[in-house]
Length: 443
Image (spheres, rainbow, N blue to C red):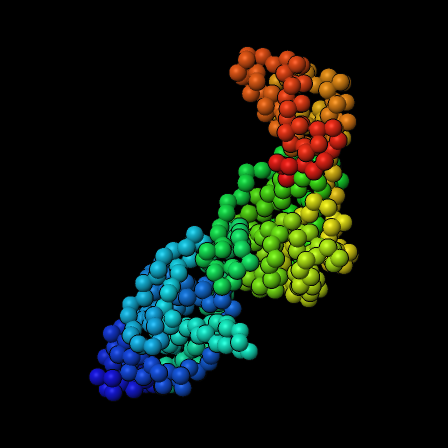
């Protein structure tokens, strides 16, 4: 049976005059997999892992009628799990990951399809290669035009599929949290989609001059690519401030404001390979990259235990970032970040998010509660104490929460209750109850 079929671009139309059945395609592939297929790839491209995954996912969703595409008709799909035994079988995804994408264990997957009424065979496979004792994986896509009288549009087909796979991906315009630096090779385990937190910028107590700059950042993201925005350029902001000053709240408010208008990629201060992060972000246009604990990635040279992370980050800022990639970073202390990373041109703006002053305490208290019996407890002595201890906005929000709980349980709250809460809450959250130390518990 194996010698009965010779795999070439005429075989597909021999059977049943114009369209082969799936079983026929399987026989052709089995008969000549090891030799002739290699010779007839037509056009072979090596893709980044992320684009390879999205391409497979998109084509298979068309095959199972889970995805509509007016330009693509997908007639057959077969796969090989182990190259050694060359046994083709129906492709069954292992699972749908928490990203919503289909995950395949097949080493090679073949898609027989029509694109603009011209028939093609697309082979997607990955191979292990070793260069100077370092093993890596190549993700290969091969396209063969099967209509001998038609002009092959292999590159046009590949470009179209990659764009369609990205734009229809379950990752598009979502918040993607990358949990580990091994995410490139362990994509499914190290990546997840998270939901935005229900916080608005107006919910955060900010000085007007800070709020204006944050609103401008949000507006630039929202307007990117619009007809009114003829000059599309990314913005890069760095937020600097001690824990408890509201940096994380600001970041969450920004993500909430632009959610589903841009793809958001979130990483923490782990020793990521920035080129891999940037390559992933480049898939989406536009994209917002959020880096918490920036000082871990771009720490000062004399304090950096891994200078490669800083060098990679600087290179990314200088040349790798596309115009469609916005950057939002946060650090507890901008002076921990290397001066080279902070200079103008690498970041457009560095915003110092400081603690609120005594003049703003009552405004924040009144924003958190409209209970006059609680508000009047904050007399001059209490406010002066809070000012002397330089408490943060997050501290005050928590204090109001605790005070409201006391009144709910006791039926009322007195100055003595507030003083007690101040003492225990302050000493619990600050390392040194006498002098301001490092704040813990709030970010």
